[in-house]
Length: 89
Length: 134
Image (cartoon, rainbow over all chains, first blue to last red; front, side):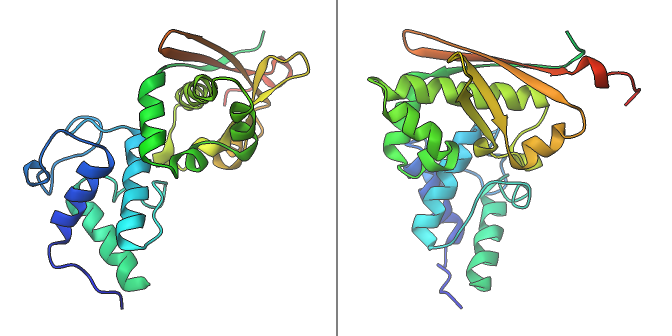
C-alpha cells in the first residue's frame, strides 16, 4: 500500500492553489465547500488541471469523468478519491 | 431544415487559455485530439486556434445538454475541416453515442477577435428521421 500523507486534505488544498495559481490561501478553503460552479467557482478546465496536479503529487491516475464526478465536488471528496486510488494501487 | 435539437454558444479568453496550457502542460492532450493539436501547432498563432476549438467543444456540449459529468470528454468532440475548409465536428465515444439513431447533424461556426474566441453549435435532426415522438 502506498504511503498516505497525514494531512491529506491540506496537501490537496496546496495542490489546488498551486496548480490553479489561486489567490486564496490553502487553509482558507473549507474541506466540504463546493469547488465548482458556486462555491470557489472553478470550471471544467480547472477540474482537468486539478486532476493533473493530483496525479503529479500523488502518483495516481485521475480523470474527471462519469465515474469520478462525485469526487470532483469538494476537498473532502477529492481526499476520498485519492485515498481510494492510493489504497488500490 | 430538420428539427433543432439543441444550440450552444461559448466564449474563450485566449490569453487565459494560454496561461492555463503553459502552467499545466498535460492539459493539451487531455482536451485536444492529436489531429487538432497538429493542426493548431501548424498555424502562425496556435493559441487562437486552440481557443476557437475549445470554444467549439464547450458549445457542442451545451448543445448536447451535457458535459464531463455525464461521461462526455473534450476529446470526444473533434473539430475537423470539411472539403471546403469550413469547420465541422466529428463526435466520438459517449458524445457520439448520444446522437446515434437520431441521425443528427452538428453545425459549427467559429470566430475570434482580439483576445476572445467564440463558437456556436447547432444540432439538427435530419428531416427523414424526424417523424417520431421521441
